[in-house]
Length: 135
Image 1: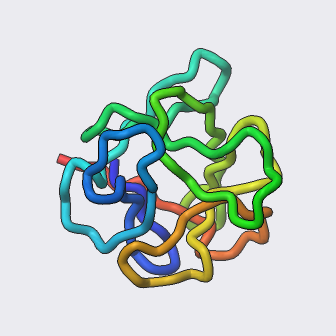
Image 2 (image 1 turned 30 degrees about the vertical axis):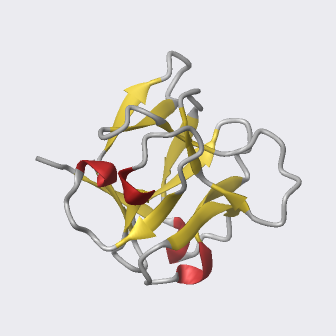
């Protein structure tokens, strides 16, 4: 799937097609590369899923301790569970351990390399995502 932001139409992107642990996961305009494709794998725990990069086989990951000013998404080879819940348009993506937080396109930025991270769910369009099938 391409994970596309409801507000901007930009997609979740593994920066510079990076394969290293800790590669930044950002928003970028659609170009169709494998670094923008994600698989939803079952986690083995109820409805929770794991979001895995087609390109690097790494996972969308956020810290387990929320003490930073900005909580940014990065890639990791350690899987993390996510809860996908329906919104009025698209879906919210929440880490299973922090259900009150959602994947957020910071400031609703339409720029390439825009930051994606966690923010409390305010039901804003920059926090909603579509899953677009990839070929």
